[in-house]
Amino acid sequence: MKRLALPTILLACSTFFASGCVYKMSIQQGNYLVTDSVSQLKEGMTRSQVRCLLGTPMVPDAFDESRWDYYYFFSSRKLEKPLKRRLTVYFADERVQRIENQGVPTQTDLAQLEQDLKKAIEANKKNHKQSAWQRMFGHGKPADTTTTAAPPSDSAPAAEKAAQKEPDPVPASQPLPAPVGSPSGPP
Image (cartoon, rainbow, N blue to C red; front, side, top):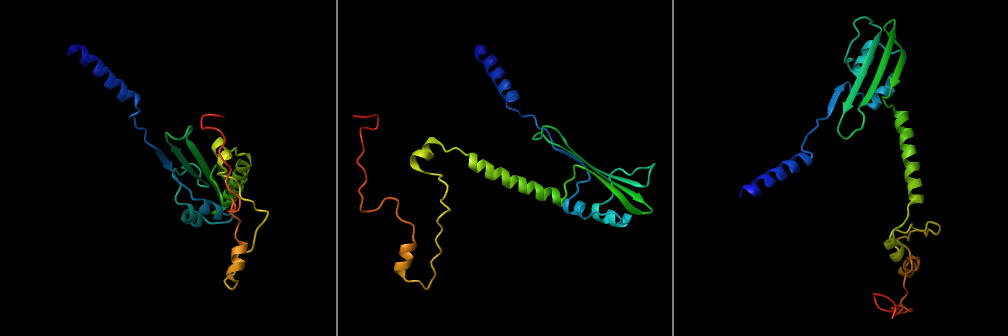
């Protein structure tokens, strides 16, 4: 009984520690800025307009009232490096003089990202290799877009609608070919 207890305890402890039961909490700090709000930020806006649009800066600068810094930090176990973003708004005569954006996305950035994503998806479709199963049985073939028939209208007769349908891949007039050999190889 004592011989069995020690290995069982060691096995249970090693499985517990190897299973990754350590929880790493996601940490979010600072001002999370929405893309729409950052895109609306313009030179010449007043401090109250900026505060209404972006909110109060997380760390006000006690030495320089003409500068507001919006920091954002996000750390997660899913991310290799923490996400750090900063938006700095400079004021002159109580109006926005200039804006420094380091990593906060705007609407134009998102539009460009969406275009790049579409291009990458199209390139991936072109480079996609079919598996042996798909090649053998024809699953996953790209649809032939060169011949597009007009959709049948409701006023067209039934014979016209049947003629516009796609043809059956194996017409009824042709019998299926006879299998050759056995499943394990040729006869």
